[in-house]
Length: 224
Length: 224
Image (tube, rainbow over all chains, first blue to last red; front, side):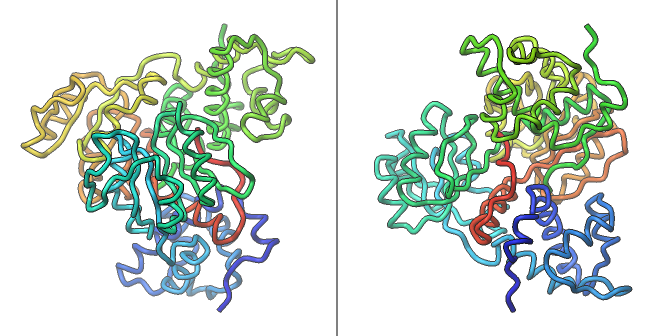
């Protein structure tokens, strides 16, 4: 069964579509656990506060299946969605910067649940290097490049101060890692084949302050 | 100067527009610090990897200003943007659940920088109640409702396990708080006048795994 997306479908997929697909994945996981065999676009829409038409459009990326009147087969749809999202496998992840946010992420259950396994930790603080976080020994940032390569790391979470983030990311790029989740409040420069996502929790609070001040919530409700 | 949005403009503003406005705010803060007096839509677009037309369209929500050839006045635009986002003031924020993520958020500098001040902490763990985190004493979750009201709390960050999140949110709603940032991986039920944003860091990694598997990054690069 080849369910990867053709180039046309791929180009049509926007950030907000991926976002909704991640939401469907979570709804489908829940439904599977509750022993539901099928689910209608109407029910998925209700759960995620979308329209059934939107759900059907999104799911049409995965080819035509689902039976009119019966809905989508939960287990099969979940398998397809997880394959498209690339979470039908385990990813080897490293984390740089074992500060407040970094330490919290080491034990973040949602990462493990989705197959993102943090297997390497790095810091530049001599007091942290050699210490044990959830069974992982913190490595010296000096060895970042070689250890990323030798550890076959595919993704790196960057949780360091903004002042040093670019310097560290340059090293990560040299280690041939193509995916970076950045918590530093800075626009990183990377080559076009390296994927970067930026995370800033304050921006979530700004949606709320906007909604409070303008008495109007923007469409969508973020990530569950 | 009244720069609040009329009902028509408000309705047109989508989640992704707010997102971009938050990005503009950060770019403008940087430009102001670097003593730039004006900025063109082209320069803002370049910084945020958008088109100049998109930038002009977004900024047109704030009324017509900016001079052709000269660009937008940085300080004035920043002031307008911060007022629209509701970050031209301080917000009193409480945090429930002083676990790994919760503790990290107490010292999260991006919150303070944008005016989101965590002034109350709650937990149900007897070992944590009464302890001091960055000068704030952790309160007993039993007193959540009264302490939220007496403390004039306007926003609550929920960083508790999914199993208890709804129960706690019901109490927050009873305390008349209208804005919740939820880190628990669960769809919360709240009355229509309560704004909820969900934060799930694993979903950021799913954008990356999608991009790696499909060799295609979705448009947009998350939050800086």
